[in-house]
Image 1 (spheres, rainbow, N blue to C red):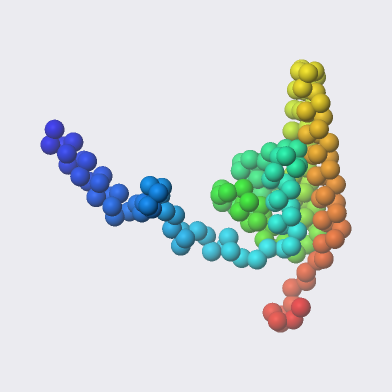
Image 2 (image 1 turned 90 degrees about the vertical axis):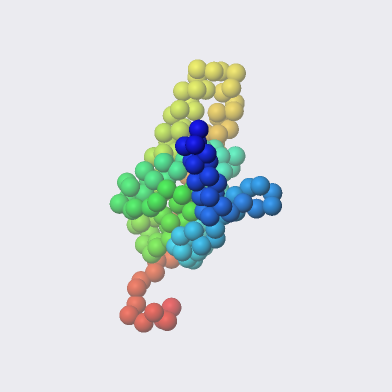
Length: 166
């Protein structure tokens, strides 16, 4: 019984020292715990891309964290698993070439095409829900067109020896 009391006291001490709980009873997140890279600026298209691509109601597909991680790995990028928005921002943070965009969007398109095959199969298996899957397929195809627009509008950035030169 004494061991249980010791364990309880040790746990309570740990909670007091390591865990900060707000007035609402929920844990307070430490702002310093975030990665500094999350605050770095990203190209303008990234915010619009994440807004549209990561919302299944808009894009027609759901890309999970592991999907984004696989996309990054396929284009020889290494990004940590975090929130999906932060992962996409990390993926495109240092984009300077159209070729990189094309390669990244081609990988994203592979994942979208995989979902479209699943939707088509489910639409055939469940004819009463075919209209729902068809609407998702339509949204996904519109999202794919957005990739071409982003690539064509993207201006490549050439590195210069003078960092202040634009």
